[in-house]
Length: 291
Figure 1 (tube, rainbow, N blue to C red):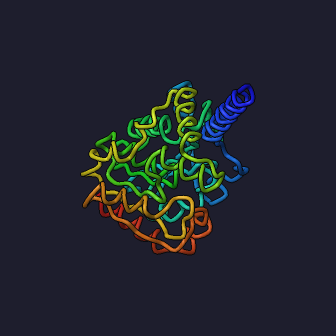
Figure 2 (cartoon, rainbow, N blue to C red; figure 1 turned 180 degrees about the vertical axis):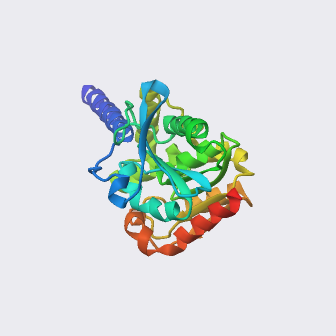
Figure 3 (cartoon, rainbow, N blue to C red; figure 1 turned 45 degrees about the vertical axis):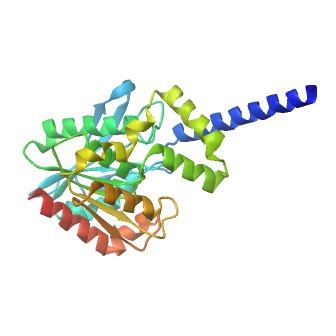
């Protein structure tokens, strides 16, 4: 009997430890690669600024003006990257008349913040950045969003909270925190949803103050019925399944378009300059909807 009790205690302790480690992995994402480049390296003028956000986070931003700008596009990068990592992705947009605002997600790059929350506080950050841009930069110019991976999810969630975003381009967004953590935990670490991931998500909410349901695209999607959204994904994307994008497009309805490309998830950085189909469509999509 004593041995059974000890086994149960050991098993329970192991589950709690595994769940806690899982919750740490979620919140400890930060920029893992050196961010050495600035817009100057691409012959682009820019200004730096910070936006004060919730939980005393300071969000580091760049403004890259376009000549005869027709709109301002706010760019949100993916997890473990930074604004510097997407510089080469924005060049075609600058040349097409889009002024760019880029920023480091909280707990990434030069932005502060205690945690990465996979969309909860990040959505609030983007809304505050948008307010700043409207007041100080865009003024009478229309606003649009472009996001990749976590940044794509945040762009959709933020647009659903606003009526001043004309269009969204979302490359490889995930549906919600629950599904993406469940998917990554099993496919990369062989952790089952019950009980480890379920416990980890509860610990995640307790540690950060984030609310998982608030970052569910499907719960917020009714506010996107009049906002055009271009979804870009691929069957070769092993980190964000194409099925998620198909589900999002179906839920949004007629205002959403799905473009399927040949690249995998991280190949975005290599493909942006050579694979012009999705770039051209993104530019034309935004141009059509800001007019």
